Length: 134
Image: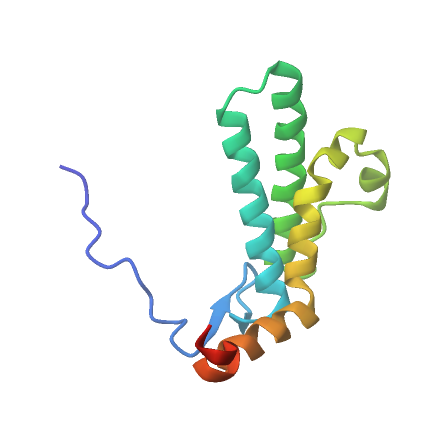
Protein backbone atom coordinates (compact mmCIF):
# COMPACT_ATOMS: atom_id res chain seq x y z
CA UNK A 1 0.00 0.00 0.00
CA UNK A 2 1.25 3.48 -0.88
CA UNK A 3 1.96 6.31 1.49
CA UNK A 4 -1.26 7.78 2.85
CA UNK A 5 -1.46 11.52 3.24
CA UNK A 6 -2.76 12.32 6.69
CA UNK A 7 -2.20 16.08 6.43
CA UNK A 8 -3.20 17.98 3.32
CA UNK A 9 -2.99 21.50 4.70
CA UNK A 10 -0.13 23.76 5.70
CA UNK A 11 -1.94 26.44 7.74
CA UNK A 12 0.35 29.03 6.13
CA UNK A 13 -2.71 30.73 4.63
CA UNK A 14 -4.55 31.22 7.90
CA UNK A 15 -3.38 34.84 7.97
CA UNK A 16 -5.23 35.61 4.72
CA UNK A 17 -2.22 35.27 2.44
CA UNK A 18 -1.17 32.68 -0.10
CA UNK A 19 2.20 31.72 -1.51
CA UNK A 20 3.38 32.43 -5.03
CA UNK A 21 5.83 30.36 -7.04
CA UNK A 22 8.80 32.50 -6.03
CA UNK A 23 8.06 32.08 -2.31
CA UNK A 24 6.56 35.54 -1.82
CA UNK A 25 3.15 35.91 -0.22
CA UNK A 26 0.15 37.98 -1.35
CA UNK A 27 -3.31 38.62 0.06
CA UNK A 28 -5.81 35.98 -1.02
CA UNK A 29 -8.12 38.83 -2.05
CA UNK A 30 -5.48 40.52 -4.23
CA UNK A 31 -6.16 41.35 -7.88
CA UNK A 32 -3.36 38.91 -8.82
CA UNK A 33 -5.12 36.00 -7.11
CA UNK A 34 -8.47 37.05 -8.58
CA UNK A 35 -6.90 37.01 -12.06
CA UNK A 36 -5.31 33.60 -11.46
CA UNK A 37 -8.70 32.26 -10.35
CA UNK A 38 -10.46 33.69 -13.42
CA UNK A 39 -7.85 32.20 -15.73
CA UNK A 40 -8.21 28.81 -14.01
CA UNK A 41 -12.00 29.02 -14.29
CA UNK A 42 -11.77 29.83 -18.01
CA UNK A 43 -9.27 27.02 -18.53
CA UNK A 44 -11.57 24.56 -16.77
CA UNK A 45 -14.51 25.61 -18.90
CA UNK A 46 -12.45 25.13 -22.05
CA UNK A 47 -11.50 21.67 -20.78
CA UNK A 48 -15.18 20.83 -20.40
CA UNK A 49 -15.81 21.98 -23.95
CA UNK A 50 -13.00 19.75 -25.22
CA UNK A 51 -14.41 16.80 -23.23
CA UNK A 52 -17.63 17.09 -25.23
CA UNK A 53 -15.61 16.28 -28.37
CA UNK A 54 -16.57 19.29 -30.50
CA UNK A 55 -14.56 18.02 -33.47
CA UNK A 56 -10.87 17.87 -34.29
CA UNK A 57 -10.47 21.44 -35.55
CA UNK A 58 -12.26 23.04 -32.59
CA UNK A 59 -10.51 20.76 -30.08
CA UNK A 60 -7.13 21.75 -31.54
CA UNK A 61 -8.04 25.45 -31.31
CA UNK A 62 -9.28 25.12 -27.72
CA UNK A 63 -6.18 23.15 -26.69
CA UNK A 64 -4.00 25.94 -28.11
CA UNK A 65 -5.96 28.49 -26.08
CA UNK A 66 -5.54 26.36 -22.96
CA UNK A 67 -1.77 26.32 -23.44
CA UNK A 68 -1.72 30.12 -23.68
CA UNK A 69 -3.80 30.32 -20.50
CA UNK A 70 -1.43 27.94 -18.67
CA UNK A 71 1.48 30.20 -19.67
CA UNK A 72 -0.40 33.29 -18.52
CA UNK A 73 -1.30 31.67 -15.19
CA UNK A 74 2.34 30.69 -14.73
CA UNK A 75 3.48 34.24 -15.29
CA UNK A 76 1.01 35.51 -12.71
CA UNK A 77 2.01 32.84 -10.20
CA UNK A 78 5.74 33.61 -10.44
CA UNK A 79 6.45 37.36 -10.27
CA UNK A 80 9.16 38.41 -12.72
CA UNK A 81 8.97 35.13 -14.70
CA UNK A 82 8.23 35.79 -18.36
CA UNK A 83 7.09 33.06 -20.72
CA UNK A 84 4.87 35.08 -23.03
CA UNK A 85 6.69 37.53 -25.29
CA UNK A 86 5.17 40.41 -27.23
CA UNK A 87 6.05 38.50 -30.39
CA UNK A 88 4.10 35.47 -29.20
CA UNK A 89 1.05 37.58 -28.40
CA UNK A 90 1.13 39.27 -31.80
CA UNK A 91 1.33 35.87 -33.51
CA UNK A 92 -1.35 34.00 -31.59
CA UNK A 93 -3.80 32.59 -34.04
CA UNK A 94 -7.20 34.08 -34.67
CA UNK A 95 -8.60 31.13 -32.72
CA UNK A 96 -7.87 33.15 -29.60
CA UNK A 97 -11.00 35.17 -30.33
CA UNK A 98 -13.12 32.05 -29.82
CA UNK A 99 -12.78 32.55 -26.08
CA UNK A 100 -13.29 36.31 -26.15
CA UNK A 101 -16.79 36.27 -24.67
CA UNK A 102 -15.73 34.10 -21.76
CA UNK A 103 -12.60 36.20 -21.26
CA UNK A 104 -14.70 39.36 -21.09
CA UNK A 105 -16.47 37.87 -18.08
CA UNK A 106 -13.11 37.12 -16.47
CA UNK A 107 -11.85 40.62 -17.18
CA UNK A 108 -14.92 42.38 -15.88
CA UNK A 109 -15.21 40.24 -12.78
CA UNK A 110 -11.55 40.70 -11.87
CA UNK A 111 -11.38 44.48 -12.24
CA UNK A 112 -10.71 46.36 -8.99
CA UNK A 113 -14.09 48.11 -9.33
CA UNK A 114 -15.96 44.81 -9.68
CA UNK A 115 -14.12 43.30 -6.71
CA UNK A 116 -14.91 46.36 -4.57
CA UNK A 117 -18.55 46.25 -5.62
CA UNK A 118 -18.85 42.53 -4.72
CA UNK A 119 -17.22 43.19 -1.36
CA UNK A 120 -19.58 46.10 -0.66
CA UNK A 121 -22.66 44.00 -1.48
CA UNK A 122 -21.38 41.12 0.65
CA UNK A 123 -20.81 43.41 3.63
CA UNK A 124 -24.27 45.06 3.53
CA UNK A 125 -26.88 44.22 6.10
CA UNK A 126 -29.53 41.80 4.71
CA UNK A 127 -32.21 44.52 4.92
CA UNK A 128 -30.02 46.98 3.00
CA UNK A 129 -29.14 44.43 0.30
CA UNK A 130 -32.78 43.48 -0.39
CA UNK A 131 -35.28 46.34 -0.02
CA UNK A 132 -38.73 45.41 1.30
CA UNK A 133 -37.53 41.94 2.19
CA UNK A 134 -37.39 40.98 -1.51
